[in-house]
Length: 282
Image: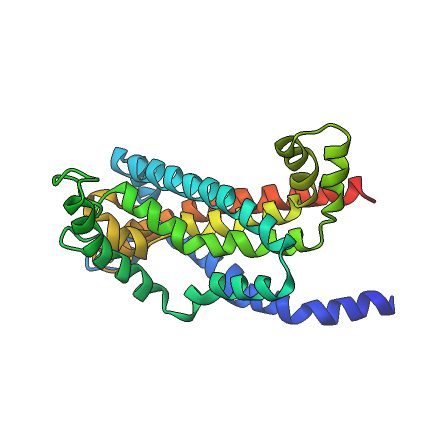
């Protein structure tokens, strides 16, 4: 009884924080999504399903598919890059490991918007990167790096990669690398040993990395806005447009609720797999 009371006291601040800044606003957002839109902007009187019907617009479905496609691609690329990096970091001497970890977190020392704006300058048709590639004949003069899905994907991978590396490194640091040598002695190839021994051992870090990349990627707004152009919008851009310039809060709320529901999927997957892993290991 005393232990349960102490646990409740310890978790109360977190629960209060989540209730005030997540649950209550989310509940209000759901309510607004079922209200009528005011022609002058904001929320009107009465209840309506117009905001939810608007989500069936083919334009929204295209944007939703683009959001899912780019977010999943970003997550897959970040995990593929982060796995070998975390593996090498875990095997390095502590001195070099510290230096490389600092390099991983250095981008966080600069404002996120400034970093994305810098890539907009670099990828600009008159930017140094494209001009250099054109001058040495690597790309056609009609090839552009900016205002396309490739630019969005590239910058999303750049900005989210540290979120994949850090949890995987935390898992790899605790891994016993002698197990890989034992697997090799038993006849497994290097890749087979990695797949059957290393990856299962860091599976929790892998799931955490997936969630930390996929969830913010789904809600990306600044990156597609600055490097994607108006023809490559994602759901986050539409929410901002409806809430700000369009002043259609019910539709913005409906889009936000739909995005929240999609975002909850990876969270639930990670939670279920972690619970299953805990039960399996006692």
